[in-house]
Image (cartoon, rainbow, N blue to C red; front, side, top):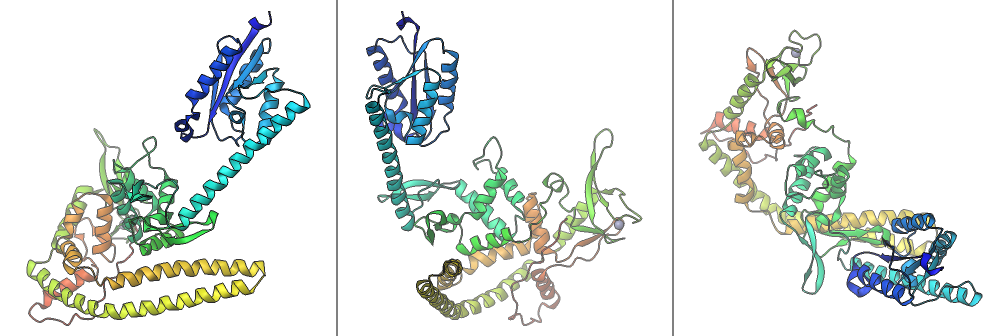
Length: 520
Ligand SMILES: [Zn+2]
């Protein structure tokens, strides 16, 4: 009589995909639960509830669903079957909580390996099992922690690989390796942000979203993802994990950027935040915010008019009180004139050749002095190492916790410095990069800046404006652009053009400091 109203149901749990491989997976749990139900003569299982959660966790959506089911079927004798006591929980507290929750619905808990009961002996065994299970989990956790921390200390990253990397076995070790094409995209984004070509985190985000190969979630590259990437020291070939007391150290994987670039990114992140450019409108008006009204000196902005039959784009002066305030300036006229101006900056090939020879001389002088620089960097490195040793001595000599905290903070700063200086010294040791690889690129740009402008990409166009002009351009509707103030390299070229045949001494030229133009 009672048997007919029995409802049997199963509960199974895995924690992560790993268990599936070890024969503890959902399939084998379910098979054992069904076998047990059959052996006891219960009707076929009415339901099976599943959780994919750690045994220490109380967050169990499957379990909650099961409780609701049990409450609804209070009228029947419900039997919950689990494969093993550890499937319920791997912690004493959680075990008792879940067990009490089942009991509260009037249901019974059964499992093939153990008879649950209410006598003091049965309770003792149950408590022991729960306790052993908890110990097992904690011990496991400790072993995993020790193993992983050891790997971190040895310079192997063993957590999630950041975008651009993947884990791979290389000569017996699991190591981060570059994953193309994402690695190159990340590299370009990080370098771009470090050198200011991408002005803000929002621009980095847009850059990444414009790359179809970059991984995204529901079609977007999330903003905090961008921040995490910019802060990620792994990209510079180093690792650290302060939570486990693993300080900054050189890792075994290949870097995407130098540590110096990483530091530049950090100081940009900590610096005053730049207003993100409004891409939607800036893409249509590349000169917006860069050119000024020749009549009043205020910024010239761009907009679309709601004309009929269709809207048309135009530039306008934003200066209130200006005689041409908000008057429409033809976008086509402004940009054609700008194009002409840019093309007029193209020097003759003779001039470029002359500049190249001159630059080559300077380059060689630099190469000669790089040896000296290396020695100087080694001295700095020596000083930092001495300071580190002094701090370590001081930490050893004091028991004042406050003081120790101060020293440790200083110590980690010094260690960062050391890494940066060591890298500089290494770079200096590799002498200067090849002239033809580097300066030729620059000269190619100088010889025809409009080529970069013609790519049509907002970032490239911003770069042209910043690299070529040292001041905002003033525009007049009738007369066009006023005389442009160009940056130093173009000035040098202009000087050369004026004085060809009468070579001016150029040995003292420093690389041009590019003006940070304000776009908004
Ligand atoms: Zn104006």
